[in-house]
Length: 191
Image (cartoon, rainbow, N blue to C red; front, side):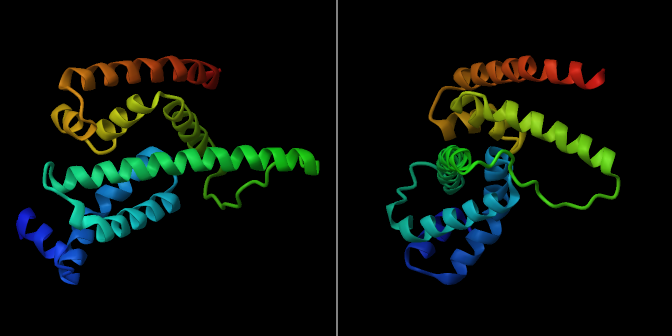
């Protein structure tokens, strides 16, 4: 089914069309959210929210961009909102913990086949996620869409509603900033 037909069927409330939409774009939406927030469960929750929003607001879709671009935009907005909410929640949680006299957070319970290797991989992933999270918002979005979603500069430009040269500039600055942030980590790690 071509996109125009899919959109028309979605607007008429066709459940089969909605199921097809979810099946077609679910992996893309989850991967995009995962690239932004680095948590599978939260990414899946965001994906669910994205499709609920699409279901309720498909009549507002004007086909000025592709359906895929619209889904990316909704996913990025939802992911950024989740990040902001999570930062506020962590801030207030730390304040509560301070006043309640708690000094350490509860560690996640996980079982590993090789504890040393798993710990090392988790440490690397945490360093990379922290570096990504410290990027300015536009750099993080451009980098995530480029590296996690493998979108072209033209697709990113359309999605972010900026020029292709601006995308190139954002990606250059994001890579440079990540390199600066991670070089110290890897130097210390090798010691």
